[in-house]
Image 1: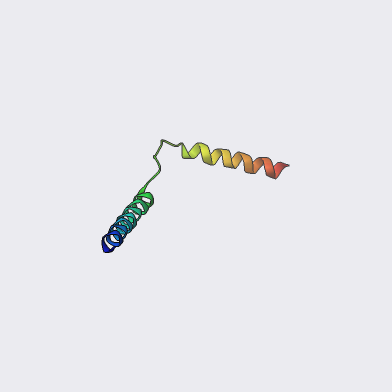
Image 2: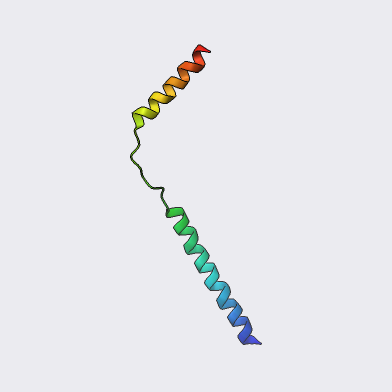
Amino acid sequence: MGVTELKRKDKKNKARANNKIARIKQLLRRPEIKNVDVEAIKASFAEKKNQTAEA
């Protein structure tokens, strides 16, 4: 009977460790950096702001 409890405990410990590793990897994931034209984005926001101000 003790052997089954140790197997269960071993499985639980391994799962806990794997979950911790997976959580750390998830936190360390970064989005892919793409070439973004920041000035174009700023200009589009300015256009939207002007359109709402005129309306």
